[in-house]
Image (cartoon, rainbow, N blue to C red):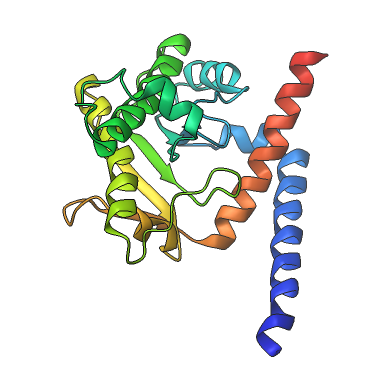
Length: 219
């Protein structure tokens, strides 16, 4: 009962912390940007096969201020429509579900590479973000070798596309590791996990910045 009572308090604390960070940044935005030394540029907008609506503005800022940067993109297990659309379009054999899922992962990476090409930037590394998605979840792989192989195939396809493009890629996931356990690659793949509190704050801050960008664009 005590643990259940603490959950709303923790959630409220994270929201308050996120709002505090946003308020501090909004009040000191230009000053803050002067001291940004490294940028991680988001290519997607929360899920694969989407584009960060602010990516062109953010890329321009990176160029204008000559900041070092990496990029990140979301990975996702495909919907039925995405599987139908992309399953045969990659370099992998299509006679198995694993091969078709690798092709979808390959297409997810190509989509992000096309976004980079459109803004004229080439990062020294791309990070693949493996996260829980409520609307488009990874199949639960605990005790299910077939589901684990399918999840892994998506990431293998993405990594293959980045290798072919000559851009090193890494993977990061949520801090508790639950998503990563659903789609491990192999023991040689190191996964960086970001703390859930920072993830929530960063997600809230990113939403506010993105909303600001969208509002400016439509003004």
